[in-house]
Structures are given as C-alpha cells and as structure tokens.
Length: 238
Image 1: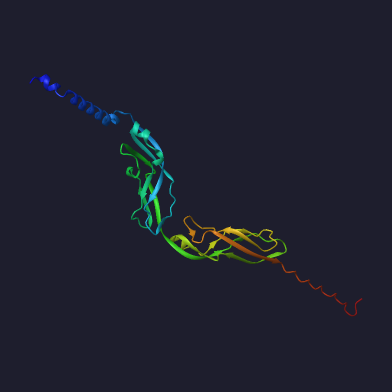
Image 2 (image 1 turned 60 degrees about the horizontal axis):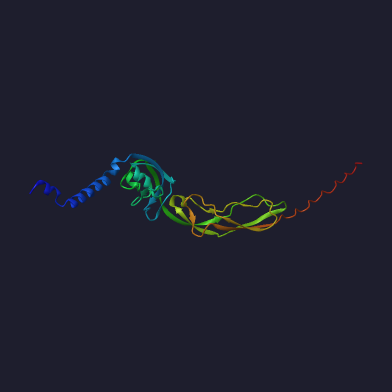
C-alpha cells in the first residue's frame, strides 16, 4: 500500500479530528494569550456561623478592599455585586480574636486570583448573651410652670427583660427612658417615649415603647406671716 493512500484514507474524518483539536487548543490557551489585568473592588464583609448563645460586640467594617488579577475576559464577566469576604466563626469561644483574611475567603471564580486584601485581618470580640429583668427609670428634665410642683412620676412598663452582651447587662441597674420635658407644664400629662438603651446590641424583649405619667399640682399657698405688734412705750418715757 502506498504512503499516499495511507495518508488520505478517511481524510474527512482526520480533518474533522484535526479541526476539533485545533478549536480545543485555541479555547484552552485563549486565556494565556489574553492580556493579564488587575482590578480593585470594595466587597461586603459577611460573618457566618456565629456560635449559639454568643454575639459579636466589637465594631466591624461594612466592607473590605480586594485586588484581583486575571485574564481580561474573566475580569470583564466578573460581577462585583456577587463578591463578598467571609469570616467563619465556627467553634469560636467568647473573647477577642483576630481573623486573617485570605484569598480563599473571597468568592472569586477559579480563573481569577486574589492578590491583595485590605484590611488583612478582622478584630472580632465575642460575648455571651445574657438576659436580666430590670426596672424602668423615668427620665424627666426641666421645671413645671410657676406656681406648679411635680407630685409624682410613674412609667409604664415598670420592668423589662433586657437582653444583650453579658458584660454590659451585668453593669445595668435600670433601663432609663429618653428624657421627657417638664418645662413650663402647668398640669398633669402623659408622654409617649422610648427606652434609652445603653449600648449597641442591647434590646428589650417587650420593645422600646414606654409611657411616662407626670402628676402636677398647684404649689401650696404660703401662709401669711403675722406682723409683730408695735412695741409699747415704757413707763416714764414720752
């Protein structure tokens, strides 16, 4: 059999296989031949797997700055709105800890490389969640109208269940209301207000609404002062 017959036997099939191989090679090597680019994004920070019975009490950044590198086509198709930086708190204990941010914490596609994260670590403080029943303290400011005095100040509810970081709840002796003004009030009144929670993360099970009742009455009229009797002249004097 001649060499030409061997080479051209099933020529159509061989050409098709060659075309498929060429297309596959072109696709697989296309990104290598593309221009490599870098871009920066600001992505939201997500905290996941917070242990049950604990809460984050430290301030956290809303986002982090991420710099990525890759071929131009993958970068053009990258949707920044779907990116996020994730810190996993699984098995973390109460207390302070610094969590480094690594490229694997950013959900980019495989063909994109994370080359920079700022900040490089996140400081997180965990505290246990505590609950405590505390009295509500009505906070009033100012003075009533002239001739009126405050007889009694009451508040509803009288007690609430405060929930929050254990270290904060332990220092609380009451839950005050937002200040209610008595300025120039001539008579009794009721004011709707809210509770003044002392720290972020503290809440009350019953909600923050409160009502302050102030009883005002006229000041008592002072009794007239008796005028002293005129002194009698002594005998023998004119």
